[in-house]
Length: 345
Ligand SMILES: Cc1cc2nc3c(=O)[nH]c(=O)nc-3n(C[C@H](O)[C@H](O)[C@H](O)COP(=O)(O)OP(=O)(O)OC[C@H]3O[C@@H](n4cnc5c(N)ncnc54)[C@H](O)[C@@H]3O)c2cc1C
Ligand code: SF4
Image (cartoon, rainbow, N blue to C red; front, top):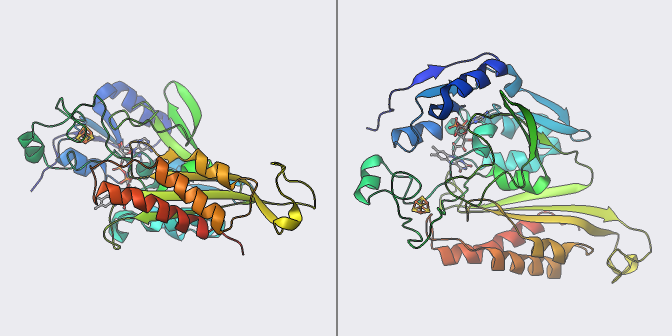
């Protein structure tokens, strides 16, 4: 049985108290929410904080405020099971409720939080092993070693960003509020994740994620498709989030000057994003896919062209479940599925 290492457990009641404790603890401090990621990592000796500070008693982190018309704010400690079932999230942001429903198991969703999910450690077959296993291969770059077993010539770690909600948050343009003893800042989900399996967040360890700000739902739709081995529960080894904003146009030339309203029924796409998760240290935006969609209706030809762009951009490595060449093929297929779900005809 794997045991937790010894640590001091702190349970602050206010944000000010929480950020003071972590600032005082320095590099030995770490926040914990549901602990469904951190505690297994500690048991495997991948993370060894001496001071663990729970965020679950900070009331501000447990709130959900707003609605689709004005935007929604979700506290970082809201449980995944509440994200799945909360009526306003289900009504106005169904993509978030459905993506959350694919995360782990009901029991883990009753413990795990949305904040913990967005800050999940990156994953790799050579890293998510117990201490003895990792010691037997002389560890790796991400922890205690000096070689990457996935790309031995590489000075970079390629461990994979494996959260189901991250690609969705990037696609819909969410923002995160971070607080520390130095003050407060808002950061865009897009750009918050580094393409580096070790230094994977643009967040300092002393910063507390307080809440997640979702934009108003004026005219956009989004969907998420997840590839995993077991339907019951498994981390994503590919996740595709698709986002489109439709605009109804009058009988005049469209912005790209190539077609008219009468040729395109009544709706064209004015904004689009395809985000790939589960195949690299950070979520990947496929701008070529968006470019083939903008200014057009969402028909079979456009969906195929966008899926081809996603296939070209996807470069999974051999460090998660399934053969990586097949995961690359699936980027095409799952992009088709994600876009099909957004058709209005
Ligand atoms: C068997 C199993 C299956 C899983 N399957 C999936 C899956 O399919 N998809 C998926 O996305 N995830 C999966 N997970 C991972 C995990 O359960 C979820 O991502 C969960 O949402 C993590 O939330 P948590 O509250 O437990 O995070 P914790 O473990 O408490 O924290 C995770 C990280 O976030 C930090 N943190 C937490 N809250 C804050 C905060 N407010 N401010 C600053 N830092 C904070 C912690 O320091 C830690 O680094 C799985 C886990 C297990 C054990
Ligand atoms: S990608 Fe390489 S360095 Fe990173 S966890 Fe895997 S084996 Fe280790």
